[in-house]
Image 1: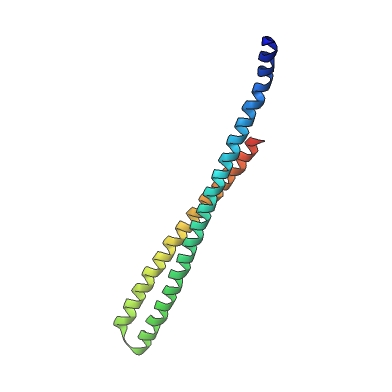
Image 2 (image 1 turned 60 degrees about the horizontal axis):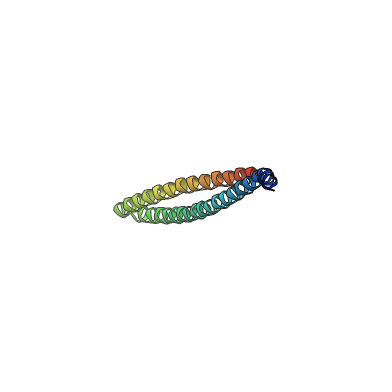
Length: 119
């Protein structure tokens, strides 16, 4: 009786370990997927901000052109400076969006790898 229980335990042990490993990798894949969603949303927010700053820069340049035609070079220069600042802010947000998008992509690859290990 005792030996049969030991043999049964030895036979079933690899399956128990395998089930635990499978569960671990599935949980890991789910965590990576949540992180990917987070970074995707972050990238979308940065893209929206970049679009906002690009539109703002366009408005400033239109205003600068208007004031240049009116002969008010001082206001025109100020609007051009504001446009440059808005463009720099937009570029910064675009860079952050690309970084967040890349992080999301990497997390999805990690999730796929974890699911592959779970099988």
